[in-house]
Amino acid sequence: MPVNAFPKKIYTNDSVIAYYQTCDLTDGTWTLLDSTSFINNVANAGTGNNISLNAVGVANDQLQIPGSGGTSVAPRWYKPAFFDDGTPVLGTDAFVLTVSHTIKGSTLNNMRYVNWGFGVSAVPTSTTVATINHNLVGTGWNFANADADAFGVYFSDAVTGNASPVVATDVHCLSTIPMIGGNGNLTVSAVDASAIATGAGAAASSSTNYGAGQLFVQLTLGARGTSRTYTLGQETLIKLNYKFSRVNKVSAGI
Image (cartoon, rainbow, N blue to C red):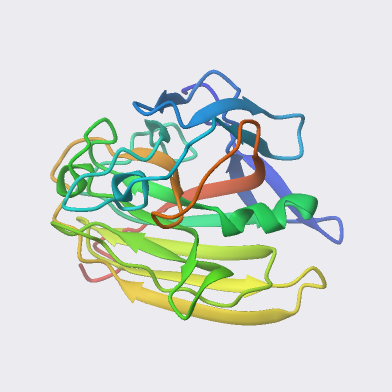
């Protein structure tokens, strides 16, 4: 079984409700691709991934998620995807990726300046959006208000991808990415700090088929818009847990 494939128990009222893998970018299993040196440092003391940025005068559009003109240079962490039993997640598998993600405390306001998305991809080392072929859930700009925090989804197409923002004040979100060969309907359900549901959204993926190779888990962090500037050491704290569940194609009638 690969490093960090052993799932983490998630408890509620002393009962186990799910087994998740923890996204700890400092555990040695993740590779960072950052050709623009946008990332300054990553630390994790058990409360989430504390990501600090380097100074950027004015962000260009290709530093966004999913990029512009079919190209994305947004920094991303990635590693091969595995089910809980240690078997690889293949592009031909039918599966559901469940993601529990939280924006932590005092860094909530910083999410107005960056976007991030977590999910699966085919070729995370590419800068061509269609080749990366990602399906991600996370935070994004709100199309109605560029300064509003929003949970939503991103998915690849040949040029731009898309996003489906939810609401502005949430701190926690449970998302699902059901995939059959690169096709599926990504969903987000947001709750506030009191676990009160505040919004939900969904969008159908327009990704191309993944093929038969092993997929990757990917966390991408990008600039929000082309007018943003970033100072050295600006931080955001992201906590992520995730789980791949295999779907039996025969019993599902696929």
